[in-house]
Length: 262
Ligand code: ARG
Image (cartoon, rainbow, N blue to C red; front, top):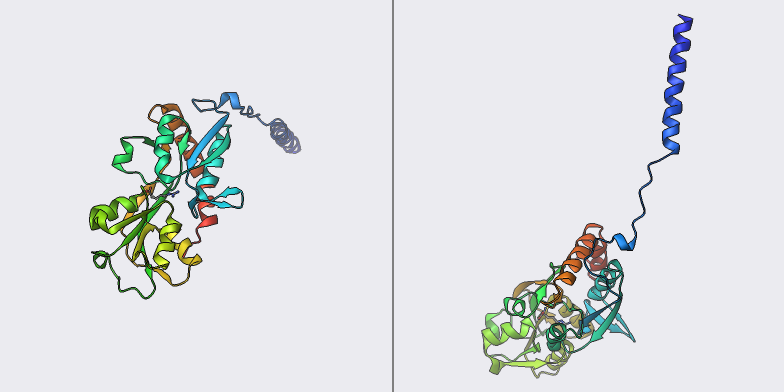
């Protein structure tokens, strides 16, 4: 009996030692290096075409650029091993700049539309936008129907511009270079309403007294990154990077930093 116990103890010790031995020599994962990167291209500098007058997606803080798109683009560039350079321009010029190769991609709270898809490729969507209507607090405009025959301000070349022109007639639409200028025109009584994306609308209404956003969703849209049709590798790489940054929570964290849940 005693012998049996000794034997069992010995066997148990061997197992314990073996287990310890195992712990001391963990299987080492080979370190991933940039050369083993899953990406198709190699990039030194990625140039982002934007219109930095569209808070909270892109705006200037003194000399610096800030916002959701700026931070997501920075994370994508880092993921692709590149430095991000931001090229600020008119919103209306972004697609041409991407097409000509002057910039690598366009990111500007840009809505995916069929017309634009004929000119550029779009990445997977990283955010949703809603077109809304801003009016003066004491306005008699309460619904989309009330906009009929009213003066509408928009940012030139945006989907708000296209919808307003299609639905209410170009004679009723005034195009401004910046959304903020349309809002100033609204405050000054030059237009009766502004049609613009919901998050910039909230930012502009918060900055300007006497304005409100109508409780009506004009259109729900997907925002995505515009890439030249000649740059399929970059499109694939940006989509892959976006996928990774979505899976690891980076994109949600960036959006949550700028858009507080209501
Ligand atoms: N989402 C709208 C569009 O694509 C407006 C975007 C305006 N963006 C800007 N950075 N100004 O037409």
